[in-house]
Length: 122
Image 1 (spheres, rainbow, N blue to C red):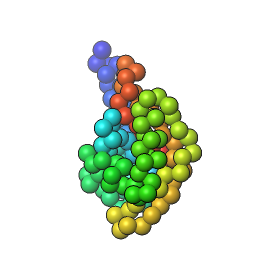
Image 2: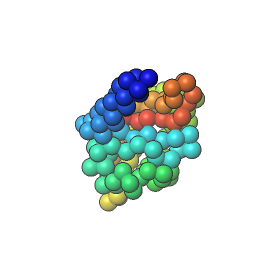
Image 3: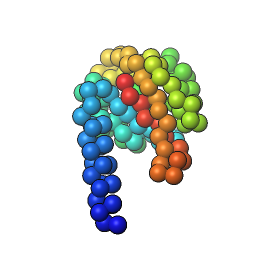
Image 4: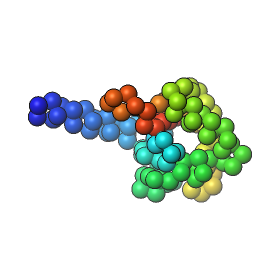
């Protein structure tokens, strides 16, 4: 059993490293819309460190006011299992610079298949 657990941990570590070092912004939100994942590319682009974003409301804090409703709808759909590809995601940086990212919003599930949130890959 320890060998399986060790292998699972190595796989989880590899996946975490892949997400963090990807050349695309990646973020995750839980079922309440709070940020649970924020990779280096998102941090570099938007100027917020991972520590500054974790636990913050994604739409309220990082989306332009005029786009909050449409972004919230995409996230809510993904939380029901209806994923969205190639959504134009408008983001606001710490310095109030606006960015547009082509986003894939993917449902995040636990080992039992229960939906736990959404992962966005730009």
